Length: 199
Image 1 (cartoon, helix red, strand yellow):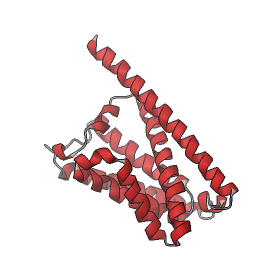
Image 2: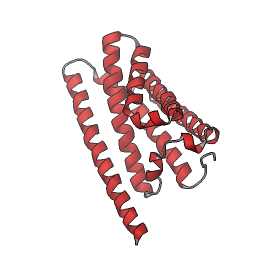
Image 3: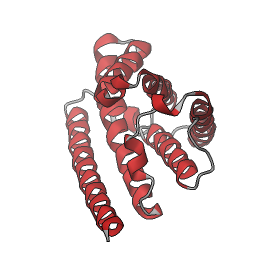
């Protein structure tokens, strides 16, 4: 009976978080729309489909590389250096994990690459200043990881990659999908015990 109530609480918590990510994503998309309407950004800089093959190749290579990065870190870093919050979502159903991971990636990429990185680029004219500034704010957003400094490396490298991918493709969907595939892939590897934390 106790296990059943824990599953219900976890499902409610996951649904609440999914609702929050959905709401925040819509809010960020509305902000992007406003930035386009007021000519701060262009649709072409947000959703360019000029190089579809290159975008697909970048998505595939970056997703595999970031998954390998995550696996190497998993086998290299002691488990007491890893934040335990992510474990709470591994027990969810495959469909809820899929939706949750997609909404989280959508929100974070629209906010950090779509809005923040673009605004830093508009005001500085330097792509690397924009990428690194967005990454710094991405780290601040994940404040819970400051208790486990190794986790900061775990999100710094991917964040820089997401920013670079966005610059290369001018298509916000590419870092969204790479972010989603990385998070979902790592969660599945842990869920089905294909990898485990170093003792």
